[in-house]
Image 1 (cartoon, protein in one colour):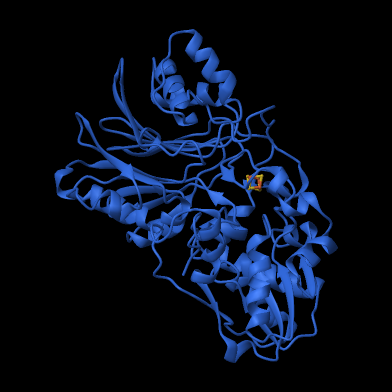
Image 2 (cartoon, rainbow, N blue to C red):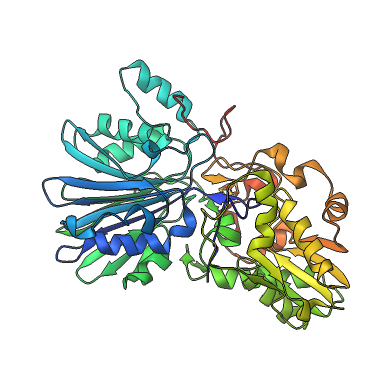
Amino acid sequence: MFNEIDPILYPDKPVEECGVFGIYAPGLDVARITYYGLYALQHRGQESAGIAVADGSSIELHKGMGLVPEVFAGHSLDKFSGFAAIGHVRYGTTGSSHPLNAQPLVFRYAKGMLGLAHNGNLTNVTELSMQLASTGSVFQSSTDSEVLVNIIARYNANSVEDALMKCMIDVKGAYSLLIMSEDTLYAARDPHGFRPLCLGRLGEGYVVASESCALTTVGATFIRDLEPGEILRIDRSGVTSTPGFKAPCPAHCIFEYIYFARPDSTMDGYNVNKVRREMGRQLAREYLVDADIVIPVPDSGTAAARGYAEEAGIPFEEGLMKNRYIGRTFIQPTQQMRELGVQIKLNPIREVLEGKRVVMVDDSIVRGTTSQKLVSMLREAGAKEVHMVISSPPVLRSCYYGIDTSDENELIAAKMPQEEIRKCIEADGLHYLSLEGLLQIFTPKEEQFCTACFNGNYPVEIPKSNKNAKFSLE
Ligand code: SF4
């Protein structure tokens, strides 16, 4: 069970933009393992997918638009032979949905070939791309990842590690990176460690992935998370770590725990499922409703709802049934279809809800359209009262570090006070988890998280314009 983030059918949620998977394992079927690794990371991006494989002298690439099985439906993985691979799944924001933006990027430069897979957003990409363009660089995509490619190629006189060290000085923002030459795999995490990245062992080889769920899916054993600013080189001699540059304090994205990551992943020392359950417990300590049942908005609200029910001593029930078999191509993304989407995906169970005072637990409210729809569905199914409790603080600011949280003028909590939101979604009660309560869960490491979308404390300077800092040649 995991977050099946579907930007078409479930438009009122922030969307993660990428997941990466890499392997160095001579003797194993690295392409097929990467395919299954990407499957485990599909929730991080559903727009495009790709795999690049290195065999010691060259890099082969296949990528395209769609889900992992769609992209590889007409392509036999047996065509790939090699001992190292990197893979990528991507969700692109509107306007940048183009096959050229699919990853990995594979390029030739003075010293041979390199492949690159990137998760995160750079915040100074406009300045960097203008500098590069003024000295002759050309770009064929509109992604900030291509800016990274150019910088790494320019700095790579000595080694890829050296280039990445220099890159960390120039480049600002969020990046968990996999880079692959014809015979070596590299992994790097930005100095704040915004996006997750972990290392695992598979037989005699190594695996690196955005989330630990991808390691266990392919039978690998989790070794550790990469440190912020750390660079790993993986080759026939094993793993070599270079400390790189570390920010004074890490800034891991706290929203990974609230919504994006799979509950079976453990990141930077915290299991996602346990954190979500504790969020629910903390919510019940902060806001105890006199109610008959607690229900989740499946799936991302489930662990928090269980925690809430346990702490409050109220029975946990499944009051909304999710249709898990709706493909993303089932309907078109028109406004009318979006509104219908919630109903198609989530169906209330009248026999559970009728005559009950219900606490409904969700992980977040972004624009509020889904919440309003859900409250009304529960009432139509006979619920006597509907109290909405949210296992995160109000989302007030946009993200510039790799998450599409919507523009600030679309965020309902930025536009109106809590009581107005309650009226707007027509709930009998509305409560959010406090930021203090959320951070308590991570004690004594509560300082180590980015919470900018809740309080505007951006750890890295944000771009003056252009919300997602996409470099656009369009
Ligand atoms: S602004 Fe919010 S979504 Fe973006 S990195 Fe920070 S915590 Fe995560």
